[in-house]
Length: 418
Image (cartoon, rainbow, N blue to C red; front, side):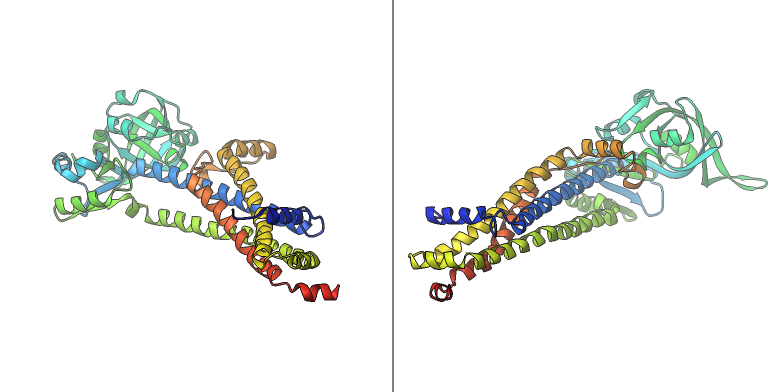
C-alpha cells in the first residue's frame, strides 16, 4: 500500500483544516485554477483539433490528396495519362479515384452585381463522389447537369442575388477575344441549375462547378485539363504514391501532395496549436505554485503537530507522504473537475455558441473570418488524458519541496521554542 492508514488520516485532516488546509482561500484558488486551466486547455485543444480536421478534410476533399500538373500548362492527352497512372501497382493499391480537373479564375456578374470566383470543370459523377458528406446540393440533380449549365456556391448565389435558373455572365481576362478594336475579355452567359453548401465560406462564396466540356470551351484549352487529382484511401500515406508517380511520369510533370499544396496553412495550424498549449499551460502552472505556497504555510502552521508526530515515531518518509498526499489530492480533484467540465463544454461547444450568440445578439463566429459555418470540436481520449496527467504530475511535483521541508523539521528545536 502506497499510503498507510495514519498517513491518509493525517493528510485528509490537514486538508479539512480551515486556516491552512483545504478550507483556506489559497487552497481553493489552487483547486479552481487547476480546474479552469485543465478545462480551458481541453476545450481549446479540442476546438483546434476540430478546426484542423474539418478544414483539412474539406480542402483535401476539393483538391485531391495528390495533384499532377505540367510545367508548361494544360495537359493534352490526359485520358492516356490517367490510364497510365491507374496501371501503376502502388497507385492502384492506394488510390480511390483519379479525376481530371480544369480550373480558372473569372469574374461573375448578375443584375449589376459582380464577384470574383474560381471555376472548376469536372465530370459530374466525379463531383458527386468527391464532395464531403456534409455538402448539400439544391436544385437540378447533379447527374442531370448538362453541357453549358453551372453549379454555384450557395453564398455566392445569395451575394449576387442569383436564383436557380437565372443566367450569370462569366468574364475572363486570361482568355480574351481578339477584335478590330483590340483584345476583349471573354464573356459568356450560363444558367445556374444547382447550388451547393459545403459549410466552408471560401468555397461556398467563391467556387463554381461546370461540366468539363463546358470549361474546356470557355477557357479555350481544347481537349486538355489543367491538372489531375488523385484521391487516396488514407490521406497520410501520400509519400509512396507521390514517389511512384515521380518515377512513372515523364519530365515536365510536377507531382505535389496536399501537404505541399497547403504547407503554410498546415504549418500555421500546428504552430498555433503548440503556442496555445504552452500559453494555457501557464494557467495550470500558476495554480500549481499556489499549491506550493499553501503547503509551505501549512507546514509552518503545523510545525508543532509535525514535531509531536515525529516524537511518537512517525518517520521522515511518512511525513513526506502526508504532505505529498495533501497537495496531490488538490491536484487530483482540480484535474478531475476540469476534465469533466472541459469535456462537456468541448462536446456541446456548438450549442453553447448558439446560445451565447442568441443571448448577446452578436455573431460570435463569423463565417467570412473563420471559413466555417459551425464551431467544430474533436475530443480525443489521449489528449484529455494527457492534459489531466500533466496537471496531476505538476501538482505532485509542487508538493515535493513542502513535503521535504516537513520531513526535515527538527522536533527538538520546534518543541524547545514552544
